[in-house]
Image (cartoon, rainbow, N blue to C red; front, side, top):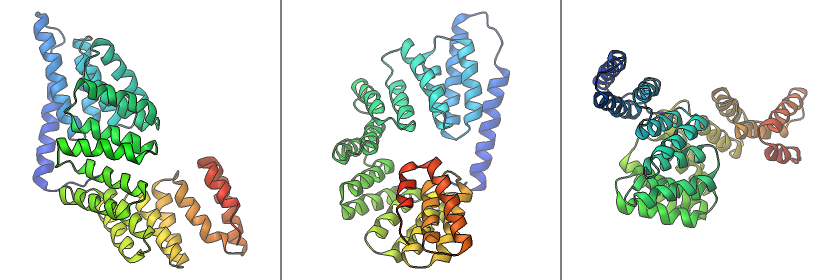
Length: 324
């Protein structure tokens, strides 16, 4: 999501990648000493952590698989492999490897936290909460675990509990932009936009490169009836991430609200071009055509309804009920 900052950063990343790949390729096929083999396995796990942090997921997975081939009883290797698959957007594989890690070491808080994140990614906040709470029971000083637990309660529709855990996360690490952003979202869900704005702006003060924080601020200002301010934040979100389909959808909603249908169409179509499964962009586009009676618009409405029925039946039902 974030773009490269400086040429030197890219060069350092490239050098690290080369070093990491060489470690993988040059690992000995066999060692005479079992201790050396175990050390080599752990060394690969440590290197993989660095590459996951840098976004080089494919190479990290390859080296973690190598680490497991050297020591198939290494719980950290399985937990890290689960986290790598989570970063890749594959929660099913992440769950398999995290559970394997726990079967080898049921006192590993990171394995439980990663397992919770996998269930969160799958849209199962109740199961995620169970694993985050287990992670915290093993390490109650981990601010990220409290942040994740707060996010799970937010996803479950319980902003009060979300706020409790996110405030705990901040008490442990008051420089955590993710916790402030999530706290802002929770207050917005609770119906307190003023407090939401305060925390989202705090998140930006700590990390001004997160496009989704600007997106949330734009949505709040749109709800508050300030379309001009909303547009500023949505455009800022796009300037940071021009592949952010949600930001284009939100801009389309602003222009739809401001009775500028042609501009709304442009942004909704851009959102759909970036994410063909963006049901809200289809719904917004359908709203434009719903109030037109020409032949082309009628055809568009039929196409959009068919798409919504596949993507989001509830939005499809709402779309059918629109009366021009």
